[in-house]
Length: 300
Image (cartoon, rainbow, N blue to C red; front, side):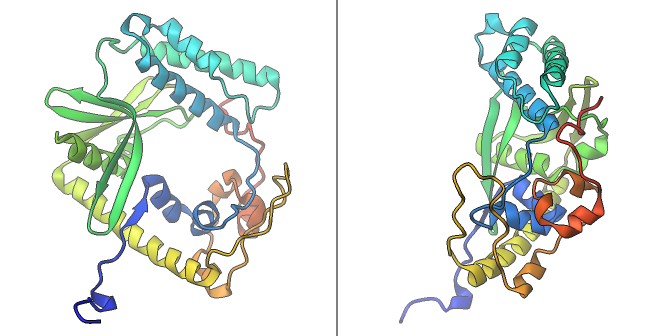
């Protein structure tokens, strides 16, 4: 075939991913496989109450910025939170109601510190960028303009206090900054974590060099994951898995894969295994930590 490049000279297909996908590969390759490759996806455990709180708060804050200026008040934030409250994972209705009250206080107290006239550049804004290896995309909680620069803002509702190192080391925040800068053609080096339970804002200002290091790290991780993906698909192909009985979330287990492929996606047992959605399918994870109730992640 004259004029065609040999196989080893062909450009490699870009690996499409999000920071969450890359971080899942780093955290646990078995969880990565269950999340992104096995189809149908292995059945998950019950929803977590702390995730319900986090999602409810994020949704309310996003909705608050979409309200007309005159309605951007603490009361509106509380109403949005109440109307969009997610009840999954709580022990009972009483616990859900108690946390609804706490979350109302969080969002109303937080928006009271904001200038409602200072419209963000984006809310729940999807940004994307490409390198020679990866096509990265992700969604930013809030993108602010401060002077001549953009600032990436990420809301946090967990019980653990945050440190500057959390902002500095975050692959996701760095990638968001790079992507936002490229899309908006505006410098973006500052990333912030807004911890609603304490009211603290943790900031880190990147340099061009530190952003480049994060992007290079993302490429490195992506190449590892992409090679494993290719080997998985070569072995498993696109064969359909067993049919899921209607309404039965317990019926789907992991896909059957050759031993050498399973080894590529070995688990990383540790304390976090207690919180894994796929714990029921992982003997190593079950041995690494105790079972947790869906509401155990709440700070009570």
